[in-house]
Amino acid sequence: MNRPSLIIGAFLAIAAAAPFAAACSGDDADRRTVRIVQADDACTPGVIDAKAGEKLRFEVKNEGKKDHEVEGIDGTKLEELLVPAGRTRKIDYTVPGKEGVSKIKCYIPGGSSTIIEVRASGQAADAGDEEEGDGGGAGTRITDKTPLDTIHVRLSDYKVEPERPAANVSGPIKFTAENASATEVHELAVLRVLPDGGFENTGEIEDLDPGTSGEITLDLPAGKYVLACVIVPGEAGSKVDHYAEGMHTDFVVP
Image (tube, rainbow, N blue to C red; front, side):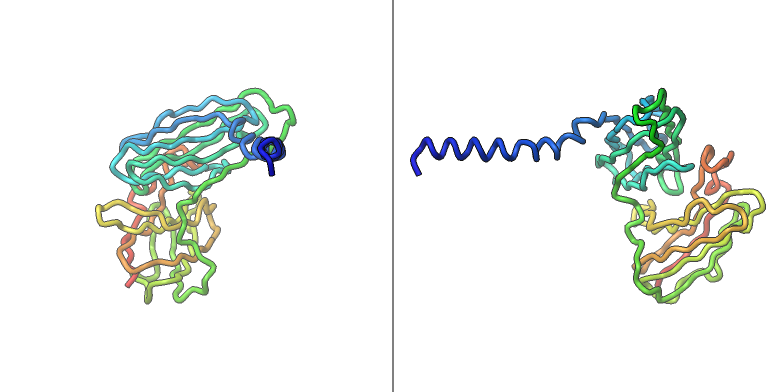
């Protein structure tokens, strides 16, 4: 093939690929980047102003010494995202199509927490109600494997009471939680104790209304754990930090 043919061929290839490149990058171009900074005492900003239906990209930077998490609460569809100390991670979120407030919890499991409000103004052109999120999820140990052991846990105000203080084996373990409270929403988080004393949230049964139950199966290695409720003020109508009220107990996986 002569040189003019090569040039024409290359031009045609680029022209053909251009629509696909635009399609792949269009969503990125449409998203506004919002930076969230995590410190060991709090997360900032506390309020994010947005337009109804706006597409956001949260760029979450952990400047603390402990691992943090962010997740949507009270109906906000943002999956749990683990941000290790010193790292930055991104997660996409689309604001609901109507005016209102969505809540995001930014926290250290068993430690400090901040409720970030996303305040939407106006109404999206399509007046849709959908909101969407994407993320890595903190509960990476959730599994579909057949459980080798089952632990029943009773939740009350403000106690976590497993039927026994240790599992029989490591590996897939099913946790069933019953909220025995008459008035309070509770949850069960299975926190793995790390060498530095921090926690890894391996998975949780969220937002159990009074009198309801739930279950989760986690693939857990041997080690020390804490079973806890990590609901904080402003979440699920709570006025107190459930963990700080004593709602946690030690647990062992052999």
